Image (cartoon, rainbow, N blue to C red; front, side, top):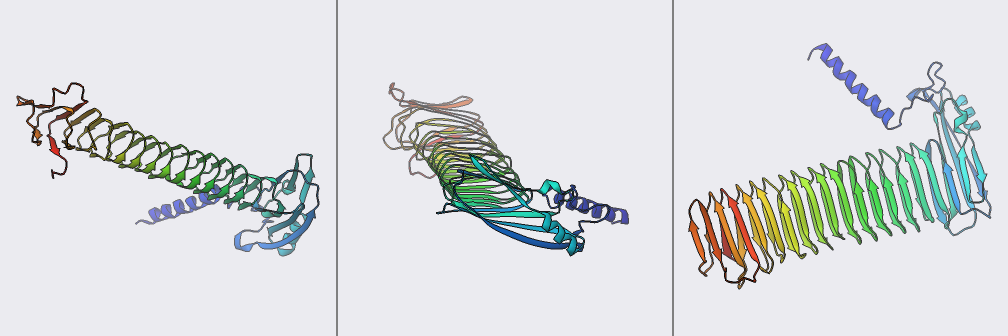
Length: 442
């Protein structure tokens, strides 16, 4: 490579690194760097000073605690007590250790008490250069509602009445909350365990994990993964490029994503809207509705209807217990077995294989540039009409069909006298149709 090309690559790498630092909050243009006189120091040239204060806040206390921390970390734990134990930590960076100690000495917290809440905050806004961090570490009465606003650091809340967290670019961990929770952050992970009420989580470019949520669960994130392990209500998961894994949800599940796989297991009625996403669903207690493209769909042990609209996607369904199966796809195979339902299948450029438990419901199956194979259950006498233009209809049962002809279009009709029986209609273009008894290899 020429020198200019090498230089361009180096510049692009450095620009990407700088952009990432600003985007994730590691660097900020708010005076933190001490431009001009280098008062804040820079990177390895800065000096650090730290200090902490402790305090007990006596009863009586309001039912809500609000913490406003500009940059740093927050930890709140509930306990069987009537007071609040507070530890306030502060860390500053400056050009010299003496300057850093001076800043630490001037950093403090404020406390405001109202009838409905106790508010803790810092005097961060008094500093033109904010290259310091503060932390609130508290043990509070278990019955308190906790609200945290933080930036660029970790927030942990455990064992309280309810939790509301608004964090910028920091991890959020919440557990053992007896009531609802509402959590927001970006570029870092969120985890909630054992929340007694409904839970709402908003993230961006960070994973989300929710375990044992006692109410409805709503998750919004992007370019990350979502894992749900237990929810007593519904689950609604949305965001682009999200890898979704949802298990053990009592209520309905809705998923809207792109370009990543979706897995559902032991859930209520489910609806998945996706693009370029594979979908696997098992043990669904209700209807399963799927919209996707260019990736396979696998459904098993569905207690309701199976409704699929796809493009360029293989569709596989086993043990569909609902009364209706409706599948539309193209350029890949459709395989359905172990069902007793009304069936509508439309495909192009891909085969269709059907293995029903019985023929007590009608079928309307159409394919173009792909074969249709039907395994006929023993003893069934549903009316059959199978026609293929540009292909053949192969009748493999011992009973002789009523019509078996070919004149440009191959046509087979059987059991036509059973006027009250459901109609099995099969139509293919430019490929064959095969009707074979159950158990025969084809």
